[in-house]
Image 1 (cartoon, rainbow, N blue to C red):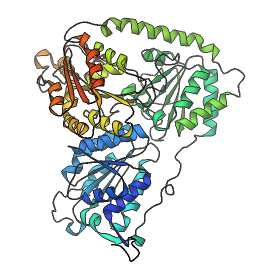
Image 2 (cartoon, helix red, strand yellow):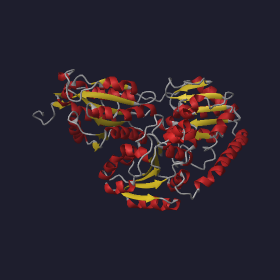
Image 3 (cartoon, rainbow, N blue to C red):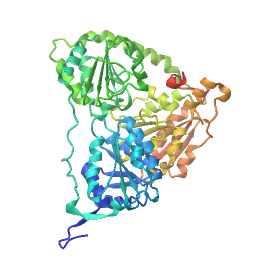
Image 4 (tube, helix red, strand yellow):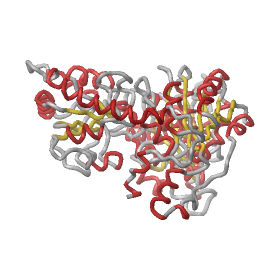
Length: 562
C-alpha cells in the first residue's frame, strides 16, 4: 500500500526479509520454491537480490555454505516448510562442523494453524537447534527484519556457523505499517569480532618462537576465515618456520615456497620442540591431538574458547582472531636481537629431505601408465592442469583423499572441501556458489562417482545459469573408501555388500543436460580431455575410469578401520 505521495505505508514480511538481507550485503539466495516462501522472492526482486533456484534443498544449503567460504560474507538459502527444511539439514550440519556462516530461512505453517496439522508442519527449530548457532521462529511480522539481523549476528560471532529462522506463512504474507517494523540499518547492528588475544599470551608465544630450535605451524581453516594469509606468511618467512596447511588454510603459501611443506608433517609433529596449531580443532583429522609429540610445547590459537585444549592438553591457548594474533606475535618477536631464524636452517633442511624422500617414493605412481588408471596419476594430472586462478573443489571419499596429498592450490582461498563432517555431494553446489561469486575464476572440481550422484542433477542448474567449470569424475563404480574398510574388516567375500555402483558414463549425462563430456580410459588421454573441457566454455564432466583395487593411504589409515 502507498500513501498520497507515492511512498509505502505498509510492508509485507517477505519484503522485510529482503530488506534485511540487503542490509547484510546478501546479493543472492539459493532456493527451491514452495508456497510458504514466495513472498520472499517478490521482495528479492524489488531489492535487486538474485534468486538461483536449484533442484534439491541440500544443494541450496551447500551453495550458501560455499558462497560464504569464497566471499567471506554469510550465505543465504531459502527453503519451504517440512521436507524442504529437512532436505536442507545436511547442508546446515556440514556448515556447522566447517564453521561456515550462513542463514537458512525455512517456511512454516501459519501461526493461526499452530498444532492443527497444517501442510508440511514440523518442529523445525527443535530439529535444527543442535546443529546451528541460532534457531528461532519469527513470532510477528514487525520482528521479521529484526530477527534476520539477529540470526546473522549470531552466525558471525566467535567461530562462525549457520543460523536458522522459520517464518510462518501468515507472518510472512502479512503487511504491517512501515513505521512499526524494525529494520536494522546496515553497518549499525554488528560489532567487530576481531579479538586480539591475551597480551601476556602473545608475549609468551613470541618468546617461545624465538627460543625454539625446531618449531612447526599448522595453518587451518580459520586462517582463511580471518583473512590471516598475509600475517601468517610474514610470520613463517621472517622467523623461518616450516608451515603445514589443511582445509581452507591450503594455498596460504604457494607450492615451491621454501616454507611450504606437505608430506613431512608426521616427522615434523614427532620431532618439533614447538608446535603451533592455528584455527583447526584436535578432531579425527589430527588424531585427536595424539599425533603431536608429547615432548613438544603445544600452542593452540582459535576463535572459539570451547575448541582450545579440547581432546588434548596444551601449554598455551590463545582465543581470538588469527590475523590479529599472528601479526601481534611477529611484532613482539622484533624486540629480540636474535629471532632464531638462522638457527633453524638445519631443521628446515631436515624436513625438506623428508619431503623429497616422500616425493621420490610416490613419483612412479604419479606417472603410472597402468590401466585402469591409477588414482595418483589422475590427481597428478589435475594438479599440473591448475592455473594461478583455478579454484579447486574436492567432493568424494577415496579419490579426493588421494588428491589431498597431491593437489596444491596456487593461491589462498582456492581450495574447497566439505570439512570435518565428511559430507558427500558438496561439489556441484560449491561450484555453483563459486561461479556466481567469482565468475572470473576457473573452477576445477574432482568428484567420486558416488559423491557426484548425490547432487549431480543440479548440473542442469549450472547449465541453466551458464556457469562453466571443469568437472572430473574419478569413476571406480564403487564407494571405494567404504569398500576398503569392509574388505579389511570382514574379508573379500563380503567386501562389496552395499557399496558397489553401476558403470555410469557420466559424460553422456553431462551432454544430455547441455554440457560437455568425455570418457577417459587411458592415462595419456587425461590432459587433452581437460584442455578440451576448458576450451568448451560449458559445464563439463570428464569421466575417468580409475582402478578400484587401489586405495589412498589416508583411507587405509582411518581409525574406524583399525
